[in-house]
Amino acid sequence: REGRLLRPTLRSLDAAIDVVRHEHGDVQVIVVCDKADEQTLAQARSWAEARQSTGVTASTIEVSLGESGAARNAGADVAEGVFVAFVDGDDLVSERFLADAVSLLSREDVPTVMHPETVLSFGARSLLWHVDSARASDIDYRDLLRHNLWPSCGVMRRTTARTHPYLSFPPEDGFGPEDWIWNIATTAAGVVHDTVPDSLFFYRVRGNGGVNDRHSGSLLPPFDLPALLDDLQALLQPV
Image 1 (cartoon, rainbow, N blue to C red):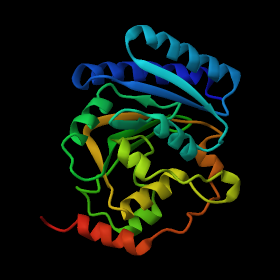
Image 2 (cartoon, one colour; image 1 turned 90 degrees about the vertical axis):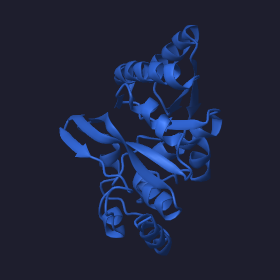
Image 3 (tube, helix red, strand yellow; image 1 turned 135 degrees about the vertical axis):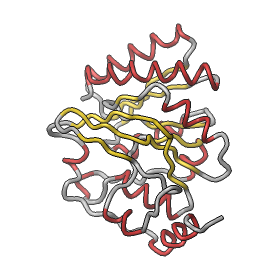
Image 4 (cartoon, rainbow, N blue to C red; image 1 turned 180 degrees about the horizontal axis):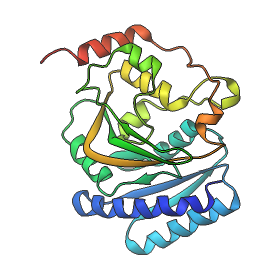
């Protein structure tokens, strides 16, 4: 039920795409419509059709998964590019975030996810979130267990997204949220979570019905704690 909230998201994506095309080449956009209502489907289809005349490859896929992690996996499964970026349907992307993330990832030789350095929450709640890089901060495993350290908006190589798919946790199952456990699991698997310097991302907070409401009573599922400890220790070792 993104409806008209999808419009500003897609407008911000247009601006970010223009920078990526100018600096890095072709862009493919896949709008994953998960249990979308007719108004949301109409917005997504209209935008994708209009992009065809601009040279941007844009399409919509319709799924009935009811869960953000599974929907992201569905998009990654059909993506054809070298890099994959995940953006939720009611968030706003700053103009340079995607292009700068791709520039940094192009120089990486280890699996890495690039997050925005600052997230500005707006709507039902206003909050400025400075996102810590796993490389630049003394992150302890307890930090990862107490707090979800990295937002779901991230850019990575497609191989990283496919090697480490999100686990699917319908809220009624009592586990989640999916991005928190994904951050823990990928860190334990050796994936580095880094930030794009001077980047900004805008996260819309809804008064009700958002993912935080749905997972307010959820528990994190089992994960590989020894692997998490080993990877964080290796990451923080001086070179």
